Image 1 (cartoon, one colour):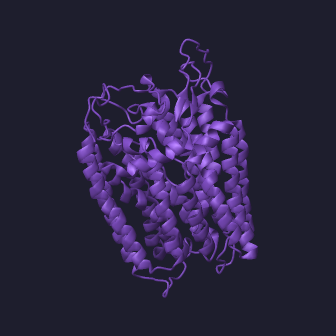
Image 2 (cartoon, rainbow, N blue to C red):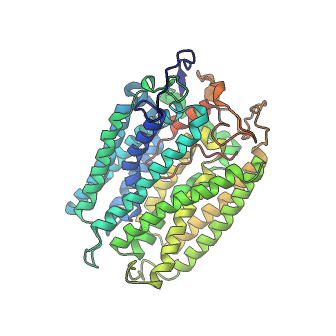
Image 3 (tube, one colour):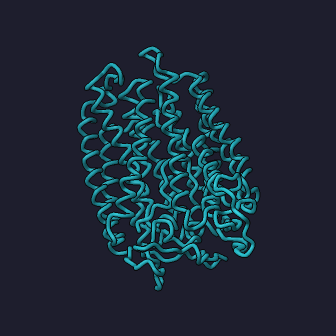
Length: 505
């Protein structure tokens, strides 16, 4: 990704209100609504377990196709953005979400997986379009001093999609018979309506030259590097030992979704309770982001200490949660399925599994916060998302093959546990404590990672994007804008957690 032209500081426009249509605040809110309606609803649909079906095979195969496609073609989004700009790029991406939800409406009647798998392939491509457009907007529209605020606003709106989306199957299936195992047609239709609304909202996004920042300057125009350059640079990152330390965390960060959604929420709870649980699962991610964000940003003056403490807390929390999961898993299996729990009738029998599922949502976010963190992932999101998507593609097939549930839990526990010491080693050996007044001067950046080789391909650093605070660099302001630009050019994914912008500073 590179910037076409400098910010026209001399040609400032009078700023009348932060709520004007061409303001970064309104435009970031609109892109948040787009993601609320599309990947946010996708999260809610996936979290139902089996896409809301009694047999999860169709959803597992569709998700495998989706993540396989993304891991291969994720770098296409930037090229599409270069040609069509934000409106068309976002609209094309959003339309594939509508098709994906529609494929399960079709499956409700025909029980044919072909359409669902085909829709998954298209969504893997379309999601790269959507997130390429989102990345360009979040990179170029806010001023450097307000970037953190706008990023937080975006993620709040986006994650509310999973919370509100959980209410859809809960409300629409609330009074159905106890034996109902598959959501009704209206559930999918409402999901499609939200996703269609997201497609329409994408046409309200302004191009960069029409957006006036809070300081009165026009936005810079973003151009992504060509697909070949992006792909080559991502592959080169596997040669860096520091990035290789992140691979287990990246692989694990979406790997446990199939187990949690299909084999905990999908197997243990009845239909309406699965929707009820989803509200709290995605809500837990928002709670987790506040807690781990405070630790990573404000708890200690030393960047390295903050990182190590964060890893330690997550390691303890993760061990406790997975131990609880083990105790729960010992009570049922594929051969000995559990009695379906209902939030209203089962009382104390429901409470324990519900708290466990809520905790899984909490763990989901904080692991992502560590794995995605630091300048590592803000600069190398394409590398991370490729590994993450490959792991997800494998995980959904693990679910389809009916691997014993206890084995699935142990594999997930081992993967996440393996991540903790490797992340700690990375932080200890790579993260550097600086006084915040200037970036690292050696061949490595302040995070201990070398600058991307693609800097040679026309990248321009916007010096004024590096600003400081009284006690050092803040989370977003510590990043040269070019590195976030590089990350977002590669960070295409379907809507599961991403923490681009939450750095281990």
